[in-house]
Image (cartoon, rainbow, N blue to C red; front, top):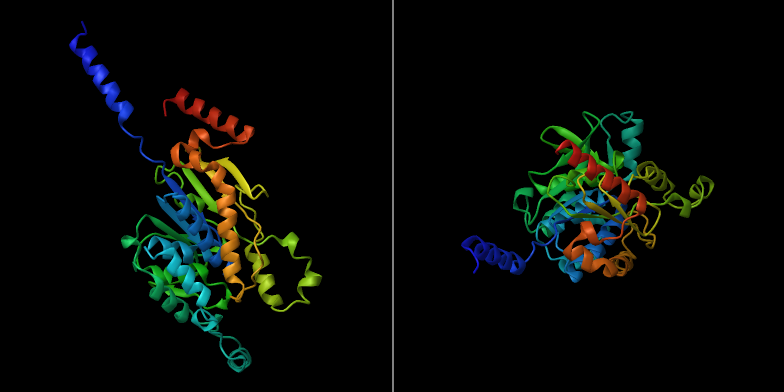
Length: 338
């Protein structure tokens, strides 16, 4: 005959066997990427939605801040996709007349002239498409990265009104005037980092972090002698300054797997798809970029969907070197009692 504690243990065992395991916590990182990035990130998020991949936290920079803010606010992605496929250039790009630029440079020696376009139109476009207007009202934690020009340092926003902070993160230097927020001036976060991975990794108990990297690859565009013969050469030079860095998590493959560099054990899934070109500030061809990004995301992640939705830490494929490093970290934590 079973004792009372044997009966209790058996009952608890049955209960734990039938209690469903909580779903993995998955974070999303959306990189900088110009106008192409806005369409690409939208297609990426549409694919995640279609595959039923939940988002527990998100962070974005520049184009990624724009799309990340819209999605976190609760706006339906299909509605947003329709909006950007119909957007007119003057809704986000209102450059000063050339005579005003020349006058400011010649007459005033450029004093006080900080960018070709104002940011008011872009902020209005964001506000019209946001469902929630503040970080605090978003569906999940959201982080947006910009650079504080007063202090020349990286800043990650996580509270306050969304639209000005989204615009600040996307305000490309020279092209846009810096955005004034609470007395400080901010500009494109890509000046310091293409994607703010550290903003959410290790901060929200994540099991996996999906990075959608859509920055430019210079090897595909030819050398500078070719660039200077193309339209909008200045924009290409600015792009090269913004996207010269190669973050630690990239592998030059369309799909890569790594462990978080801080040792928390989260798996970093990196998507760096080949996408059609879309020079800024063009929007014609954006729908194709969106569709290709959606298809690429589904093709790359579908084979690993079961692992992502159940136990990404254990079931996602990892490079042998990364796996050995993570095991050694785990052994070190056990040895020190942490």
